[in-house]
Image 1 (cartoon, rainbow, N blue to C red):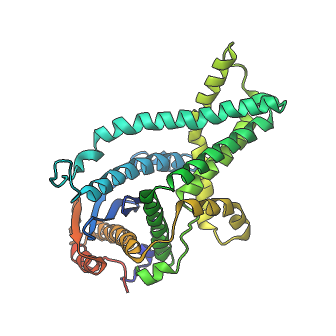
Image 2 (cartoon, rainbow, N blue to C red):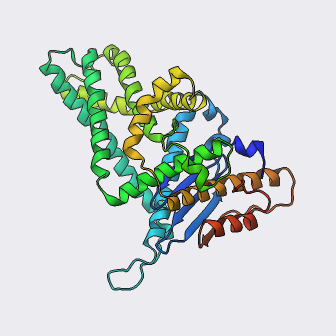
Length: 360
């Protein structure tokens, strides 16, 4: 289907276990390869909170909203993909393990929230303490001097890269990284206005300027600059030195929200002006970092990523046409298992007649 509006539609994604999640402006789609080699596809409507609170669309606020919503949607998609991957695997008593499709409910947040708090404390606390020690050894001025903040950012970056290198030794993680590359290639194929075929996707780079990994790098760099400008002006927050430093760590965690907002604007500009030589120079570190978190995907992995983005685009187009008054049913949620990518393409046309993007 040749639709300029559909070709210009902004789509973001995330790799999950044996699959890819794609998010359009008003829907979520997840495609996963199950243990039988089939493609399981699920799509559903989705609305950002800024549809109800319009001021959250403002620059420097929208980045925080996207970060939180991406985290929530990503965790649900990961839980769903884990359920699909577990289907057909033997349980301890020899019976097939049932799918736990409810695992993305409240119980997920009981695990996620404490984990996030712990990760923030470690990611902010450990570099802060290490930088204080190194700064004192070098005769620096503590949080009032530039050296501390450079050391703080360097330790964060080393922790981040070290963590990636550590988990990349795991086979399952390496497969997720390959699906990450497939996600980027599928999005690039859509953004180029090309048919969603494996051959077209294969030609594109596995690196993308709007990648979330690059976003995390910008968070670190922008954080260093902001802390360097702000912290020297903050008076002692407590008489005890250890308490003062603890409160500074909590303050730096709170400042992550405006830092995320700034970082998103950088990512947005990078995606819009990615061909500009100056912008390409600025985004080069983020693209280089993607070498650690993406791998070249296989054709079957590309098929899953293309199935995910094709479903998201078809649902967006169906919703647009239904809103315009056409007699077109858009179900609240849909899930189906397809034998292969060819069967998926044929099935998508029956899901949303006349709305699927071109596949050849």
